[in-house]
Image (cartoon, rainbow, N blue to C red; front, side, top):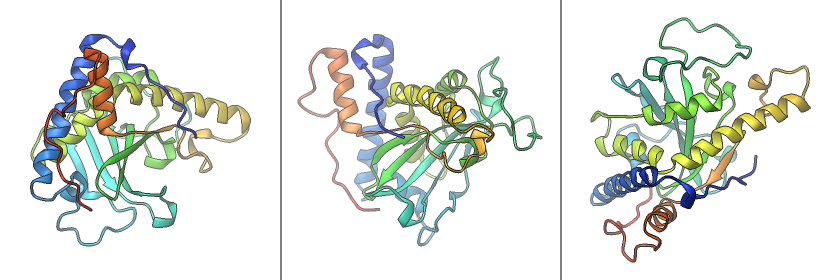
Length: 257
């Protein structure tokens, strides 16, 4: 699916822009402290794990915040199946006990019923990383990709602010960074989720007789290229009318994963 997803930050409420600016400061501060020791958020999760194994979750067992019921992991696809320049990606989720009141799974066919009261998790968005440990793309996935329970885009949007990883393991800066990225790019994620549902609907109409949510031919319904520094500059421009001449924090050096 294409990247034709636009977001007009200038039209956003000031309070939302300020929340994004606060997230920007958090993201850059995490990047700064990691760079001082030559680390990246991806490297934090791969440390001590040896050569990354394709499809394996990092860290083993995923990262799960038992207070907020947010969850994420990082993994890599086989090299021939990755977009050029990408190393791997994060998958982010929210489990039912962390969801807002009134949220229910969409009325769509499920391959098998979910048993536990906290098992019907929702995938929020995936964050693709390049070989320097920088986020370069956001994308959504079809249900079969992660085995999630399907929720309508409007309900997933309500979940976004509930994604918080607020503990120290396996990496305090990595956990704060991914929480911040979800806030910094919230408008794009919202647009991607609605584009996801539109793409799934179009696919179902053009492929009658198949279960669209389990169709292996539809893997990534929506996606968009991103750059953290460009997003920060756009937020500053929307807030103040001009771009900052200097970054909020000194620019760190870059290191390969």
